[in-house]
Length: 272
Ligand SMILES: Cc1cc2nc3c(=O)[nH]c(=O)nc-3n(C[C@H](O)[C@H](O)[C@H](O)COP(=O)(O)OP(=O)(O)OC[C@H]3O[C@@H](n4cnc5c(N)ncnc54)[C@H](O)[C@@H]3O)c2cc1C
Ligand code: FES
Image (cartoon, rainbow, N blue to C red):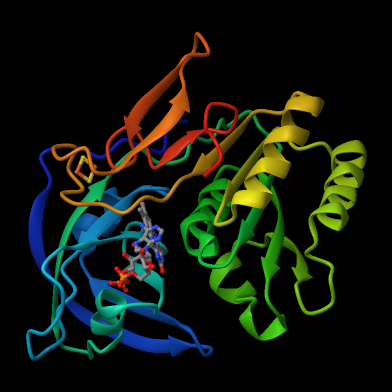
């Protein structure tokens, strides 16, 4: 089942904020009243957001943000790590404010309805990108196992990740050393041997991406990775978001994260 791509043309829309709330110390969630956009959004796609607070202050360039919540009769949701002036302006929005969005954009994750089990390896705000995959997999009867890596239990956001999907979560933390690559590798090797997934997915950490790419190749398991890159237009025109990826013949080519991505084949993507 192809969970993308977006149907062009995309248009700018000013959507009403229906919820704006802090999540822990560093994250923020925004829910928008955008039924038509939410219904045609797919896990792994993103929107380009104009980051202006209610006083109109914020940077000129839009910021790309993964779809965190979407679907028929659901608000359109984003989960953001507040790190600079764009995300700070988004976090300053209040219920009733309007947010200009362009999307849904890019190529989302692909799920095969014949699969029985998938494994997700996510860190930090990569959780936001991978979260809607849990619901989409559950709707197809696919079991989701997730290894979530965070600095400490306070940063985990397990509920924000799994929602009501029933995903089985194994947390690993920097604070107790369980997120160190050799320990995550041992955990994944055990999983792959006992409960082999049909596919693996990752986002949010270069070192975890490299680990999963290596293990998936060794075990012959297909995978997908959602890449990030700073963006200009978000629409495929400026080429400021290119990343190096291997094509089917093994040649290194430059592809646009906003148009050919952000989701790429796990073995095709190159480390950053
Ligand atoms: C397809 C896509 C989906 C994304 N989804 C999410 C999401 O769901 N939640 C979320 O919190 N963030 C997400 N991001 C990252 C988000 O776009 C950036 O964090 C945001 O643009 C930062 O804007 P700012 O103005 O707050 O910070 P800035 O002041 O612009 O930047 C703060 C710091 O972050 C760095 N930075 C900015 N943009 C990026 C980027 N794209 N990749 C890596 N580093 C960057 C800057 O170099 C700087 O060091 C996504 C990025 C992409 C490309
Ligand atoms: S951001 Fe302009 S081409 Fe991708």
